[in-house]
Amino acid sequence: MKEMVINTVVKVCSVDELSVADREVVDAARAATANSYAVYSHFNVGAAVRLADGTIIRGTNQENAAYPSGLCAERTTLFWANSQYPTLPVEVLAIAARTEQGELDKPIPPCGACRQVILETEKRFGKSIRIILYGAKECYIIEEGVKALLPLSFDAGFLE
Ligand code: THU
Image (cartoon, rainbow, N blue to C red):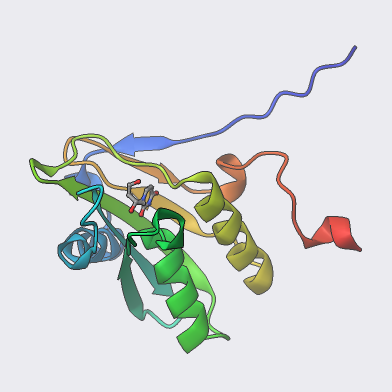
């Protein structure tokens, strides 16, 4: 039997080590957490994307008393960005979270459903998205896009 090995490369750095351009997207995601509607989980998530023309769009998690009707910050952000700017590729996505105790030391990764939506956004523009996960003590940078977080993924190619 053969084995298939799938590697994921994650760069780890402190927020101070980020480039000015990356820092801007990360700071937008951090600021966005203030607008999170997380009255049930009290887990405030902010996301921000930088589009190909430099526009930065932010979004937050939006919860609902009917729990599954809520949506994560990553998807509100991507859906809004893609609705408003359907021809502008998404180049960078940053994610940050905060609880009542403040910002989290470690980054939070996107959930499975958000990974699938990130994948669709990459496919639609034919461009991978650099993903930056913010934590107060360390940040993770995934340079190669969501395929690093969603190996063996299902995309439109299988429908052909
Ligand atoms: N959440 C996000 O917005 N993004 C993630 O990547 C993980 C989880 C939200 C969903 C829910 O509102 C709250 O965090 C707790 O799961």
